[in-house]
Length: 451
Image 1: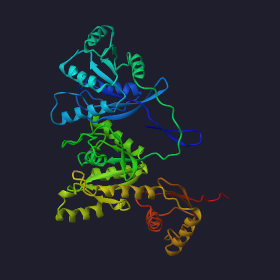
Image 2: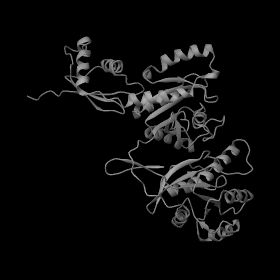
Image 3: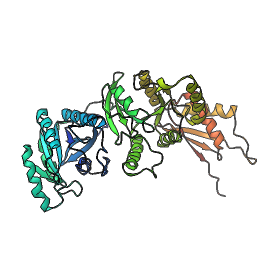
Image 4: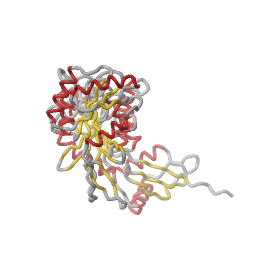
């Protein structure tokens, strides 16, 4: 589905065709995906298995829109985690309208490639065969050997240099069904939720439990998710768009290779979301990384829900210390709804939707100018600004410039103390709620008239 708007701002949803990109590990699928979508989105590194989940991207070619689903390397004989990656690729094929099968032309046909072909034939989906790593004229002869796969004409392409990508995309469009004409309806788009947190705190397990199926690869190894994964999930009778993200590393500057790009993409996921669901491992101490993630959410002005996972591992002693840590370390975000749950068993995950709703309602709260100034008048009368250097700044007028996040502009007779600004924010929350959202205060002191 893709969201579009007409001249009046009315939203429509269009079912765009889906292209699944499959192939053995390290044949260049993610590099080819980046070439197709025209930007560096899919994580690419010269190590097999960097892509583990099925990840969707929007693409257009010759004026036609379609969705590209990048998958993990498909090894038919895989075991363990690699087997789950193969299962993800199979799911992608069943959901797709057409399949782009990527083969390394420099290696030729392998037993694994032939096994994949059997699965593709059984699926009944149209298949476009990409002979990748054909960087020059000489390599084209090797590509023609791929006719023996029985999938029709192999399209020689260099994902790295872009050679032959136009012909390949023309073939992809021919294989995909035509996009139906969109019909504009007055509907609201799904609320966007970024599931964020340190590596291995259970973000993907939570997404799978919410979705009711295994959508994201889960493994005990930290950092299993690298690309952000968008999933539409039905919860509480409504559709939500969940963005499962890579665990944010200790420091972006010291993260290497695909971890560096994954960290940047996690920040991008927060920017794309309306509310961030921060997952913290309740059985472990709140860390500096958790605090840094919270700061990223506050800086981006997104709503926030704090969710302590693995509550089945939290005994009475840990609970006591966790409460102390929560009061001490998370004092800056006491306004965020908090829930305790266990993703593995599903215990209390039904509390997530009410918490998200509360945070979004606070994020979108708007106070009229009249109500705000009446409130500010009472606040100043009860607790005027302290006198500094023989002067006492006064609040002359206030207005809410925007919601999402609530942003207030205060016109004053002088600069306000930081402590007094915090006092105003606290009183705003007491009076109007603003659950789950940062509040932005912009103070504009009146300029002195020049004589």
